[in-house]
Length: 214
Image 1 (cartoon, helix red, strand yellow):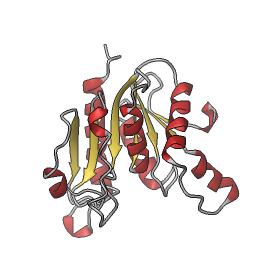
Image 2 (cartoon, rainbow, N blue to C red):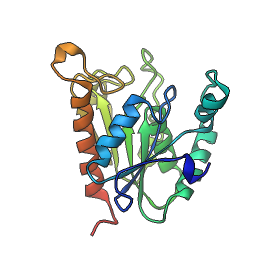
Image 3 (cartoon, rainbow, N blue to C red):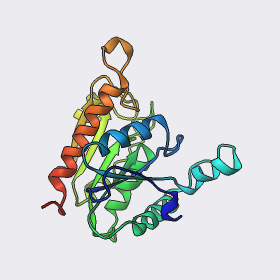
């Protein structure tokens, strides 16, 4: 991968947020396009990339499944190396956010990771609350923001309230939101309403923890 394969939104001199996509949708899905643009509007330099398995779908077609976790983490490290020196916030949608959190939890994680932003964290597979994906979270030593829909089947607000969450993790809850943070029509909110508030929360989080800010 090289810099020409990355998507950039927002001011080049703003705090950097590197975002990965989820397991089933590309870096330019409606969700990723809209949220990246909304975050960038707050002065954040948002950088998006695709894991190799997803990029191959564009050229070879088909539905190649996600690579195994070690390969995803290696790719994430490689993309980080393409960015200019300085603090970087990493994160992504669902699987992409989980991969970012796992990289930040590694003992040899790049020391310029300033924080992690997870959009729809997959705490467990839908309907399988016994298969938790949280064992690595206590090992993360930088701040983490999880932006989660209140009714996300991968981890609802009611479920999370009953768990012990490490103190470095904070939440923004999208009202009535699903795994894409989207509310049902009966809630009287639009997808864009929830995404806009999520973008605002992400910008506040980055501004609060940006070591490069003057």
